[in-house]
Image 1 (cartoon, rainbow, N blue to C red):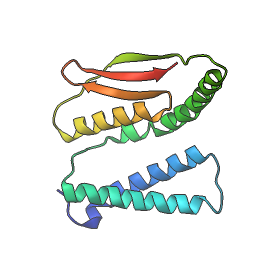
Image 2: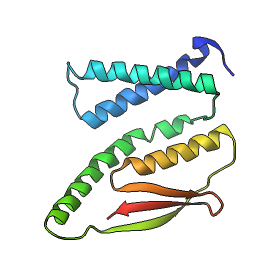
Image 3: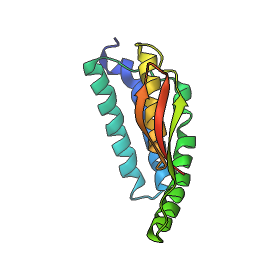
Image 4: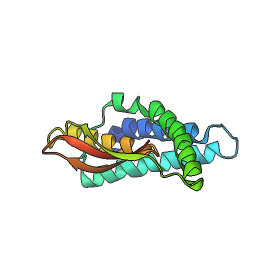
Length: 150
């Protein structure tokens, strides 16, 4: 385990940049009053997350390639928000929403830190979009049970 802030600085900076980018993408604008607050909160979140991992032990080892998918995830959240809005309008007009349960093949990996990070990011990213949520992770069968709003 790396000790001291020096060894954790790259993780804090990477997480800070990722959180700030997500905030900017989700807000959709750079505002002189809101953006500095978002960047400061992202810094606090990054320091808190890395500190918590240092105290309880590094259970996750996130690959940089996983963080590169964040802009695509943010775009899907925005797109799916329109899908949910359309479904809400249809429900208000008396039509039942179209939804379904899907089984998605999923390799849960092992008990190592990289596999734990992969599982956590897969569940979080699948559930982040408003049209889907992971209901169950069946490790033995290697599938995610996902509820989707069509």
